[in-house]
Image (cartoon, rainbow, N blue to C red):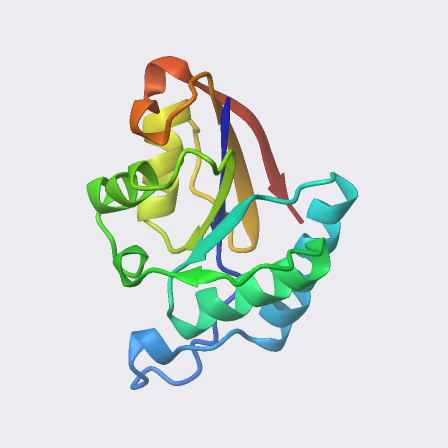
Amino acid sequence: MKTLYILRHAQKDESKPEQYDYDIELTQKGEENSKLLGEKLKSKNILPDLIVSSPAIRARKTAENVSEKIGYTKSVMYNEVIYQAFLHEIVESITYTFDTVDSLMIVGHNPSLSALAITYAGFKEEMDMASVVRIDFNCSSWTSIDKSNAKLIEYIKL
């Protein structure tokens, strides 16, 4: 069994339209919501084996806040591919995950994260900021994940 947690970053600060997208930070509400989401995940005993995040500032900060609240003690891995990724690029990154990892959390951006949830589990809506989709795959290798062995378990939002 493989478990994938798809986490969309918290609310971003759009007050500086000239700012380079990669450098956009979280709003104060985004900071608070990412911590609240982490607390909610902890209350559900969610502690992935590996957290991989887009290195964009808002995703990085979301990953850091969530990992701190859930008690994740390893280093968050940053993967440039997740930033502005097409769906197939995220899927490829997931399939490169070592099979010793049974639960993986990807922290990134829409529209690719919602597309990932739709593709694998038929998720029917756009993911909100600071939300998580959990999908379980009935297989033993990340290279074997497919919509035929995927099951949408829950959508966690504030």
